[in-house]
Length: 335
Image (cartoon, rainbow, N blue to C red; front, side):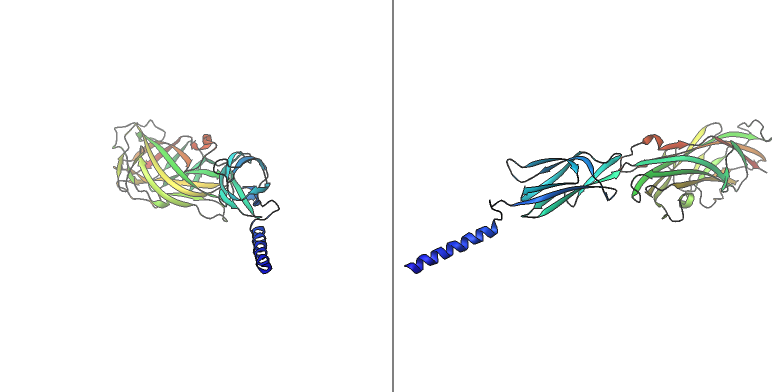
């Protein structure tokens, strides 16, 4: 009988020890710690930021409201915890996401970490620089040109934000060309109806629109390029009217992958000049064609504009997303 009682007590002792191992702590509670951190452009950041931690409990979940990082919340109940960003964070920055995961499990004696990630505000910008003729810079209000030459425009542009990040930018560049007429005399009064109107031929060579930066910078990736006429797509090989005394809009739409905090120079070879028939120059968007080579001066007024737009991202200042050139008058001499 004594042996049976001893055996029963031995079993009870084993059960008590097992329970003590499975339920840690003097009071049997299962707890762990939660750390909340933040980064700005992948670097650790400390400061005021409002977030909410929601813990286990189907009917009455535990809520912890945090107001700053870096922070540690000790002795929280085991189970799934969710971190939610509410407001605040680094100045001139925006919230991106929470890593490793916005919901993580606290285990006995363990520590989980929620990291709130921020990036600097993004700002796409562009400025007109100058015209070029055959690659030579031209700053004046008018210039003389001849058949076979190429008219180009240069802009400077970039996207401010976290250095090294890549961002998609949609760009629309426009050329307003106004055929003022023909005259036999340089600086004479041009008029229409004296000779056949010029025409425009669509070339859309992919190398017509380029971006350059410093030698240590990876070339920008061009995703797409399309030419348009008054905003409507036009295919290669299309002929477009250029009526006298009416302004005509020629456009090119491109999408680029640009690196933030890099100043790019954007060049647009708008057109080459041909006589009689299109003789497309390399790397141009259009060809300006004098269809009947009657000797004299063919006069045009030009203005160009470039506009940039972040794709799927917020731009904090859209006031600098567009710039336009001063007008340029070109006198094309045909012999």
